[in-house]
Length: 89
Image 1 (cartoon, helix red, strand yellow):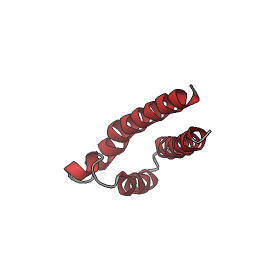
Image 2 (cartoon, one colour; image 1 turned 120 degrees about the vertical axis):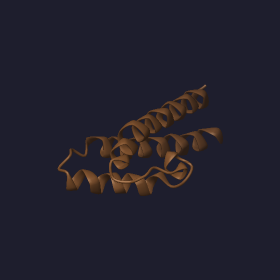
Image 3 (spheres, one colour; image 1 turned 30 degrees about the vertical axis):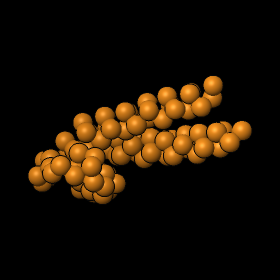
């Protein structure tokens, strides 16, 4: 029962993270450079996340969406760890 809940939670977190990544991070990066296929999530989105932070700091744009994405990554990792722990019991 708890494993289903953790699975649905992980899926919801991934969708929320990907939504923020596409509509907030990539739109801001697109103003600076060309977006490649690897930028859409097939490469290393953490590199783009740090680039997004630098852009926000240069333009004095609030870092709320950067922090939200970091918290979602932490929540996803915590959910996966709980899923692994509860699967043994």
